[in-house]
Image (tube, rainbow, N blue to C red; front, top):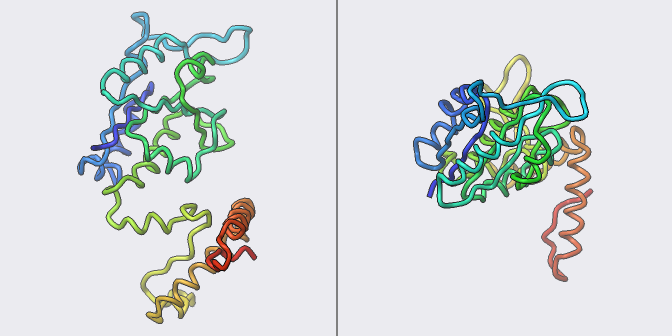
Length: 251
């Protein structure tokens, strides 16, 4: 059965390029995922389609109101038998990473709610959200771009979405490390040569080189990931049965 993803937004027209191209488009055509767009403004309580108001206590900007968001989410929930996991795209949420993407890819249904203006009335978070997700510590104009990123990342992990499933397992972050360097033709370009080991045809040597490159690249470029990978490697080594030498190199 296809995963169902509902996206609630004030700007559904922003999603046409994402849904109509590349992996997400092919996954939709193949029946791997079904994506439905809902305009929150359609649930505004007045003829002016107003969805925001000034914050209590004063302050700049406008806040998204409870009634249209609650009504939109409840309407969408009723459109399928399986309840959807409601994810608010919010700068106050958990930072999106590959383990979170993998967990969300295991859901039968997601409901992504993209905020705007100064954010959501906090009662929306308390009354509707199963979780909040952020792309990172920076400011966007709204949650639409975050919803697109989350959708693309999740769809890539769905069975049948990617032509070569093993390629997904080797990408950056899938193992906790950055991906090793990649090369293609020509063998030499402007004095820069492809490493000889990749031309050797010796699969064991190539695998060892790639593993070492992934570790070294992560150590140099992302010390935070490197430290986390070392900690996991040490825990795995400590938990391994006596005599089990299968462990990562935490050096």
